[in-house]
Structure formats: structure tokens, C-alpha cells
Picture (cartoon, rainbow, N blue to C red):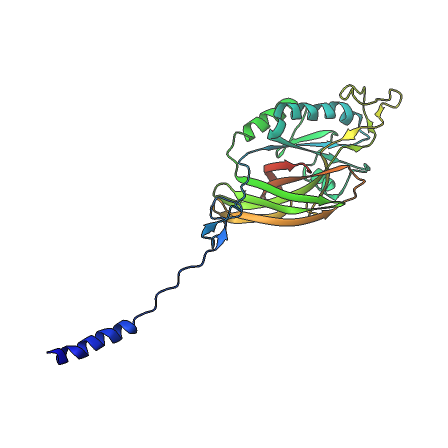
Length: 291
């Protein structure tokens, strides 16, 4: 009886010894594990606290086409921008486009001037709309309506400035399912550039010296000046095309050299556009001050 059982026991032991090897346990991969984050890592299984999030906010864009040779720009135009900033605060991003022979004119300013064909200076854009007549009222209506929308895209920027070089990484995230062609412009904006400005009576900025004889602010402090786009493209580069799922993220790393004498402070503005034929429709924007 015992002899008959011996081969059976040996067979069982041999089968156990030749069985399949156990799968090795997966190694820990650290990274951001939140799919809604800008820095989500699909291969990570251990969250390391590296998640970065975009601000969930819809803003509007307000643009002034101006010139230091334009008296209405120094009074009426300056007053319009001042009023819009006071009314909307962080709900708008403002940019000034200097035309013609101004030292603040550049190729991007010229491209925007051509894109929004207009005759009068100053002229104003609220989001994608060229305003006619006094723009404060219609501009406010357009901005108020736009800012009630749920944002199609979210924007985030991280940058450093060393001497005459500004470098960083810009993020754009689809906040909903999208369809179409979207681009991201990374604009360098100058602040507090002191240069003379023609005006009429100097009443808009009573804090600055105004010369009655020449009708000029000798030391006008220009703000929010379009200085350039990091890839020298008026409406940035394409980031989404076709059908795009919510939470899809694209990043652009950039570096831009500027003259430190041109303006004492350089900021960065991100603007998302949607292309419709040959025109660009404003989507969202954010302004980052230099720290």
C-alpha cells in the first residue's frame, strides 16, 4: 500500500516544483496621480505632491490701439482704459497696441492692427469685437456676458526673469470637450515705460506733470504695452486641433530676450484663441506679474 502511494506523492511534488513563477510586484513610480492636474503622470502610482493646477477662471480681453502722437489717446483713450480696470479688476486683461512710429511699436502690434482693421485712434477691442463709438458701455456689456461663460480652457504660467532673458513654461488645459483649432499666445508685456504722450488737457492723470503749451505729458507712464510674442507669432502656436477631451493638457517651454532698458518691468500674458477661417476668436487670458 505504501509502495503504491510513493509514485503519486513524487508526482505531486514535481508538479508543484515546476509550476508558473509568481509575477513580480510592480515598482513604485512617483508622480502626480490626479487626472485633472496639469502635471498628471499616467504611469505614476504613488502621488509625490507634484500636481499643479490652473486657476478655474474666465477672463476677458480689453485692447487699446494707441499712439503717443494721438491727443485723444492720452486723454479720452487713457480714461477709457482706466475706467475698465477700475470696473472689472482681475476679470479683464488689458493690452495697449502702439502704432506707427512709436518706440513701443513692433511686428506683433502691427499684425494685431491689421487683423482688426480700424480707422480711428484710439480704437478698442472687447474680447474679439472691435468697438465703435464710446466703448465703455458696449465694452462692459460684452465683457460681463463673456465672463459668465464656463471657461473652455484654463491657463497657467511659471517663469523666471534673469537680466534681459525671461524663460518659463506655459500650460493650457481643456476644461471641457473641445472641437476646432486652438492656439496659445505667450506675450511679453512692458510696464511703466516713461515716454512723452500728447493729450488735450491732462485731466486723466493729474498726478503727472502736464505741459499746457505743447499739450504733452513729458513723462507719461505707459502700462500694459505689447512688446512681443515669444515665438514671434501674432496669435501664438496651435495647441489643440480637432476633437479634444476635457483635461487634455499641452505645454510650451519658452525663452525671450528683451532690452532691459525698454521697460523697467516685464510681465507675461497668456491668451488662448480659437481660429475661425482666417480670424482668431478670443477664448481666455491670464496676466502674470514679474515677481
